[in-house]
Image (cartoon, rainbow, N blue to C red; front, side, top):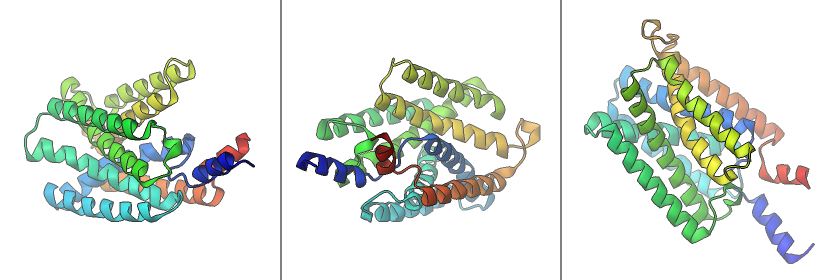
Length: 264
């Protein structure tokens, strides 16, 4: 094996994020649903208030992210706990702007879209790639989690703005992001868009999809929902996330090095 090949293999073995498989998207959507329902449960049902809830989950996210950075490889439990917490925190960032400071959703959507473009621009200028298959250094991991946080805030703003403009019921609101994600999948399969662009667009769109699913499940039947409540929805989805993460931990189905070995 050449020195270059050895270095490439070492980088792959240290990749800090999972392979993009069907399991990835399942857990991602589940996390976004939890981000919506659990934030609402802590804030509204338990009466913590928007500011206190944001501080609580901001600290929890920072602590978990610290341990994520300390790891030398992808560990499903730590990685997906970080995603769950960043989904809640990202949701609360937008909710604070909207409900706490009366910032219009169109402004939040525009602001986070521009901010995400800046993050991607600097990330690419410094690293020459936006691919998640090479998150092998701390700078790249820092850019990755910064982008993830902004996508959750952006997805929340865009999703809420869409509902504000359309007045759709919780069930109807699921259809638009779902259709857009299927459109992204189709353009990727046809070769019209590259894998990196397709991934990040779909990543943004799963936020309003998951949030709208959460609203549909939690909302009372009188409002077009299923009436599970924010606690019931959160518990259901957290349990499902835990089950899938345990499965991935045991099988290693989403480890980048395992996928590369199968392809070799």
